[in-house]
Image (cartoon, rainbow, N blue to C red; front, side, top):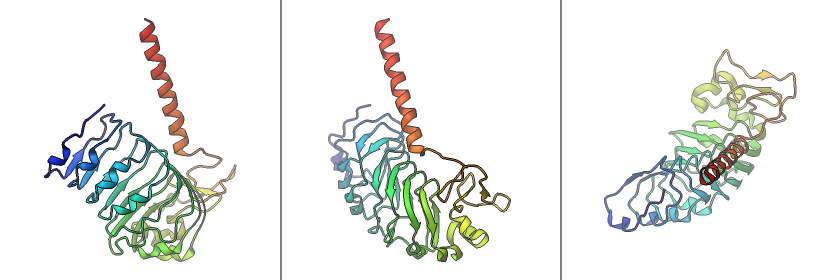
Length: 260
């Protein structure tokens, strides 16, 4: 779907734009809608790097780009969108290292799951996020490595999803923070953050009394937060393969229709 945003700068009272699930492929010109507070472009066909066009929307409070075909790295200019409370970039193919997102003072929901992000979680990650508010972070199904740093303790009511990565440690001091994981850390300690190496849980962590992290007797994962025993491919890899098959199938269908 091609949509023209010519003249959108004249819509001075436009604060919310919901264009999810429209098969959109381009957003050229949308950066002129300077009054936007909410922009939902999820479940579309946007491909390539995260469009720099969005860097103009400095008043945005919610930016949703989930389930597209976005690639490249997390751009530095994301840090200029200081008013964001919600940033959803899950289910794409974004690679490279994690940004610290330390410029955000209002961010309470960040979803970067199911991408191909690598490297450690920075010690300055969410440095200025709201300390007393509930903060939801999902970085699961990537290739993040290292440990969960103690510096995250500054978020007193953090819910963190970090399973299915290459994480090998959780700072033990985090395992006594009563407000973490909706209070589950009080019940289950470190297991409420990530299951230990050599164990698994279908959520990668313990959330229920009767569903602990279970020992793997066959092919234990060398990383924390495993959702099953044995080697697994990342969700992003599986999704890429699925999309490739769908694309090939579509091309074949078009060729058959053309020949007929």
